[in-house]
Length: 98
Image 1 (spheres, helix red, strand yellow):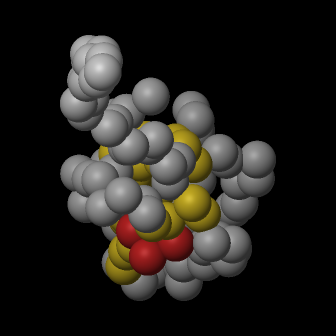
Image 2 (cartoon, rainbow, N blue to C red):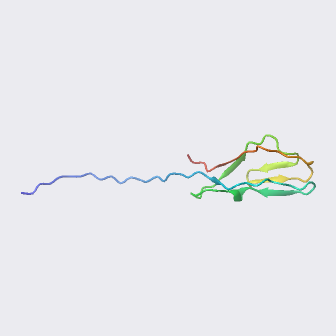
């Protein structure tokens, strides 16, 4: 005599775990007084998932003549600022995912 049984199957979507952006060491950013220029920081951060990154800074005050262009991920020196320096500036990369 044969007996039967039933089984239920469920197929679930596998949601991959998001990996946080990773920073390479960022060197000291140095501008030459009187020479307008910019330094990109985009090459110092990657995202293993290929997500677009937003990079922000905690800098309330940068040296005179230096600004941060978040859209292009670069610091810009207009060439007019005097010699000076800042330290303790924190850069944060966010991929917009938990």
